Length: 96
Picture 1: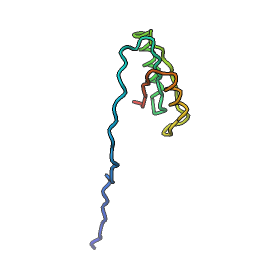
Picture 2 (picture 1 turned 120 degrees about the horizontal axis):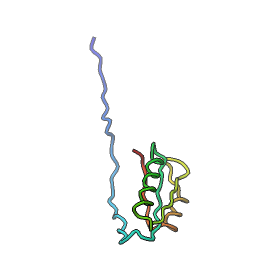
Picture 3 (picture 1 turned 45 degrees about the horizontal axis):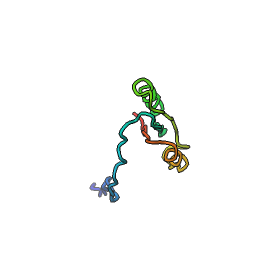
Picture 4 (picture 1 turned 180 degrees about the vertical axis):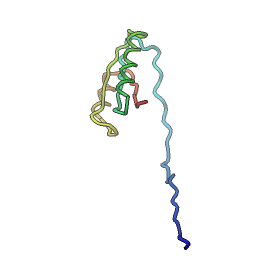
C-alpha cells in the first residue's frame, strides 16, 4: 500500500539581518572597568571566573566587575544601563 508523505523544509524563512558597526576599540585597558557578563548559559559562570582570574594575573590595572542578568534569554534593561553608565567595556560569556 502506498502512502503519501509530506516533507517540510526545516530551514524556515530567516529574518533580514542589518549590519551594525562594532564599538570603537579602547586604546588601553589600564584603569578601565570591564564588566564580565555571565549570560547564565551552561558553564558560563566557570568560564567568567577563569577570565576574571586571568585579568587579575595578567592585567591587574583593569577593574573587573562580574555581573549577571536576572534571567537567561530575557533582556535586562537595568543591567545594560548599569554597564553603559559604569563601564568602559563588557565581555559576554555564553558558555562552553
